[in-house]
Image (cartoon, rainbow, N blue to C red; front, side, top):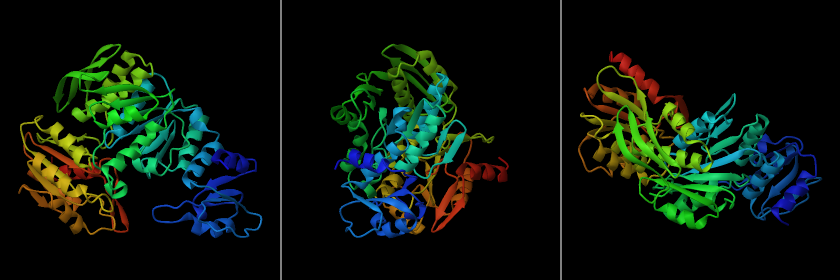
Length: 478
C-alpha cells in the first residue's frame, strides 16, 4: 500500500495528534516508531500504547503481535510517513503559505533575514524558521535545531496559515534533508548559498554532504524556481538535477544577478547591483564579500518573484543587523570589536579575509571548536585562523561531553605558526584579547555568535559573547 493511501486510511478515523516520542503520546494519538541516530522508536511502542496510542506506524523490523484494538501499520520509510502524515494532519499548510527553502554551508541565516526585510518592505506578512529562532507575527520561539522536525514544522506552518502569513523563509539543514524533515513541504522556491566541508562526522564525505543538500532542489517542481550561486562549482550540478526554473547570482560575468564596483569598508559596503531589469546602487552596513553574496542571493530571489527594484534597494539599505553575524560591539578605545557565528573553515576564512585590509592594525581572533561535532574540521580551523590573524586565542566553544583539552589538541594539529595562546576559559580569553588590542586593531570573537549559552559536560550555563565583551570593556574602562 502506498504512503498516501495509508495516510488517508489513518485519517478516516478521529486522530487527536501524532508523535514519535512515546512520552508525548496522548489518548487517540498516532505513534510513529522511527529509528534515529541514538534511539530506535520501535522499542517504545508498548509505552506509546500505554499512553493511549490508537495507531502504530513502524517499519518491517517490528514483529507483528496481538496489540488489542490497536491498529498497526507497517511502512518502508517511517520518516517519509511521519512527514506526509504531519502535513495532512495540519491541512497541508505549505500549499497556503509560500515556502522558500534556503540551504548551503554558510549564509543561510543572513539570507533569511534579508528575505524577511525585502518581503516586509513589499507589504507581505513574513515568517522565518532558522538557526536563531522561529518567528511570525507575534510568535517568537527559540530554535532547538536549524530546521525543526516534521511535526513542529507543520504545526508552525499551520499557525502561519491562521495568521494569514504570505511567505515562510526556511533554513534547510543537510541533517533535515537526510532525515526527511521537510518531505511534507511544497517549496515554491529554493536558494543555494555555497558548499564547503562541514558536518563530515555525520555525512562522512563531501559527496554525501552535497547529495544531502541536493535533495531540496531535486524535490522542486517545474513551477518553482531555484536561485543558485554560480560562483560555486556545485551549482552546475544542481542545475542538472533540478526541474525548477533557474536564476543565478555571483560576482562572475556569467551570473544573471551580480555585483560590480564593490567598495568594502569597516562601516559597510557599496556596490552596483546588476539585475536583468536594471542596475541599482547599493549602500549597506553589512561588511565583507560573503555578505555581498548573501545580498545577491536575496536580491535574485526577489527579482525572480517580481518584487520592484526600488523595494529591493530600500530594504537592503534599511537593513541593519543579523544577530551574531559580524555584529559590531561599540568600543571607545580606537579599535573595533565584532562577534560572529563562523564555525567552519570556510566561514572563518570569509570573515577574516573580509576584515583584513579594512583597518591598519592587527586582527586578534578568539575561537574554539564545538564538542561532539566534526573533528576533521578542527585542525583546518586552527590553520586558517592563525594564518589570517595576527594573533589567535584558542578557547572553549561548546565542549559538550568531550574533554576541552582534547578539542584544543585537535585544533593545534593544523597550526604551523607561533602566533597563538591557549586560554580555555572563554571569558578570560575575551578579556585577554581586548586587553592586548590597540588603536586600529580588530578583535573578532567567533564560533557562537547569537548563542546565549555554553555547554560544558552535562551543564548548560548562560553565556553570551556579546554580553561578555561589553562587561569586559566596562571593567577595562573602555
